[in-house]
Image (tube, rainbow, N blue to C red):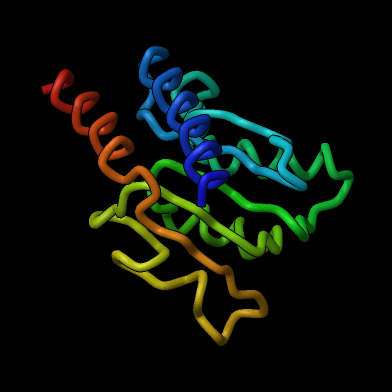
Length: 149
C-alpha cells in the first residue's frame, strides 16, 4: 500500500501540471517492476485530441517502452476513475492492475456508471484498487472547476 500511495502522489503531480496548463487535472502513470515507465496529465486541449486522456497517453508511451502492446506485470495509476474509452484501452493493453483516486459518478467505467473492467464477457478482467488518496484527487478537480465558474 505504501508503494500505491507513493505512485499516486506522482500521478497527482501530473494532474497539477495539467491544471497549470489549463487542462482538466487528471494525472496517470504506468509502473512496471517498481519503475515508472510513463507519466502524463490530460492533453486534450494541447494536442487538440479528444482521446488524449492521461491514461491513453501513458498506455501508448508504456507500450513503446516495453516494445509490446500487452502490458503484463504493470499497474496503471490514475487520479480519477477511468471513463469507458480508457477502460477499453486498459482491457486491450491487458493491464492487470488499476489503482485510482476519486470515483467519477458522471462517467466512471470501473464501478460508478459502468463496470467494464470486471465484465466477465470480456477476454480480460482487471484488479482495481479504488480510493487511494481520493480526497486529494477530488480536491484538485473541484478547485479547478470552481475557478472556471
